[in-house]
Length: 248
Ligand SMILES: [Zn+2]
Ligand SMILES: [Zn+2]
Image (cartoon, rainbow, N blue to C red; front, side, top):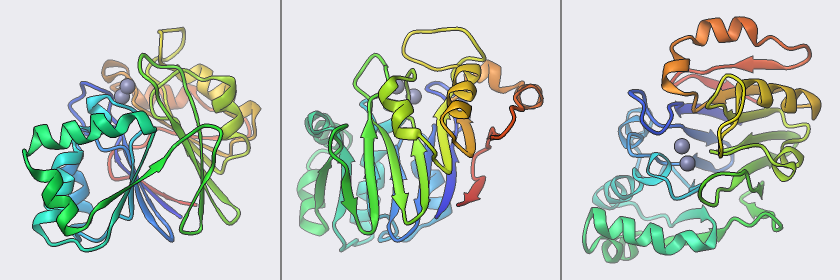
């Protein structure tokens, strides 16, 4: 499994939004914020490349790139259906967003390759190709879904936005890699997590590699200092840059 950090930025950042590409038996994009389409096209311009897009929640830095990504697939004659993995209540939001971006585009997309929705529910894991997908809910101002991808003995988790909950910590247990938002260095802000809380949670549940993303833009300038301090025992902590990748 190859994991590519297309972006690691927060909501109002000058670097690309947090979005992760997972290449395995299926290629899945985890979130598609407003600044992600050019990053995706630079990385791989093949309209058939993606098998699925997971949309964690209805914030612009996680979803507003979708209309452009779909319309480019359309204009380049994609044939293969695309799976959208999201909470069922996001379907209307997604279709309104696509139509607001390009009026009439839903009809075009359906005529070319079509979209199939897969329901991301905390209680119900999904099978997609030979990947097992499981979900949990972090705490955030809107409903968010965190995801775990298991393929054979390898596992990857992505928190999207939100504070740690018992449900998410249990989803991440013993993961080979956890990609977690860490908006703050320490302390508390409603609906987000901190570097110190995420490191201590991940160390206590057997996560092997932790990648911290969606770090507050002011704080992220001090990344090198933060990494020097954040060296817990038994867990590798990364603060990746755009286009860094990890092989699991
Ligand atoms: Zn966000
Ligand atoms: Zn958010």
